[in-house]
Image 1: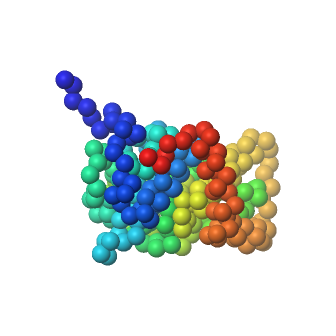
Image 2: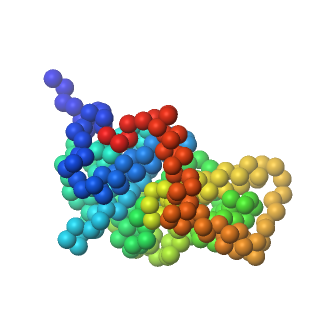
Image 3: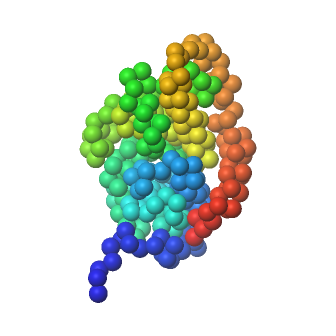
Length: 265
C-alpha cells in the first residue's frame, strides 16, 4: 500500500480539537481558519505559499502562535488543522503536517517583537508584488493609499525568508508600523485580531491595485503629505478594536458561511 504523505490528508478528516484546547484558543483557531478562507475568497492566496498567524495566550511564559499547516490550501483550512509553534519553530501539538520555514521566520519575528500584533497577515498577491517591485513603493495616489501611507514600512528583499538572522532586520525596518511592503516579495499587515489585520490588508490591496491601474492611464497626481496625514488620521477608527472589526467582520462571516462553510471544524 502506498504511503500517504501529510499533504494528501484532507484537513476536514482530522479529529477536532474543540474541547481539547481552551475556549479562547478554539475561538482564535476559528477566526484564523476563517481568515485563510476569506483570503482565498478574495483571490489573494498563492496556493500554500503565504501565511497568516495568530498569537496565543502565553503558557507559563512561553510565546506560541497558530499558523497554517504546509500543504493545506487556504480555501480548505480548518480550525483543528492549524499548527501551534513557538518562537523557536518547535511544533507544540500533534499533527501530520509541518510549518513552512519561511512562514516561521517572518511571523515569529513579528510576534516575538510586537505584542500589539495579535494577528499577522502576509500575501504574495499580484498587485501587492507589483508595487513591492517598484522603486518608489506605494504613492499617495488614491484615498486607499492615503489611508495606509503614513503607517507603512518597507523591508528590502534578502531571498526566500529562511534565514533566522533576517528577523532582527525585518523587525527593525517595520518598527511600530502596521503595514509592511516586503520589496520584490509581497505585503504584510498586523492587527490586534484577525478582523483588523484583514481590514488593513483589504485597504493595502486596494491601494496597490489602484496604483497599478492608474499607472496604465497616464501621469499620476500625488496628493501630498498634508492630505495623506489628514486621511490617515480620519481612518484611525477603522483600526480600533470594537469599531472596524465589528463593522466589517460579521458581514464577512455571513458571506463566508454562504460560500465556503466548514472552517470551524
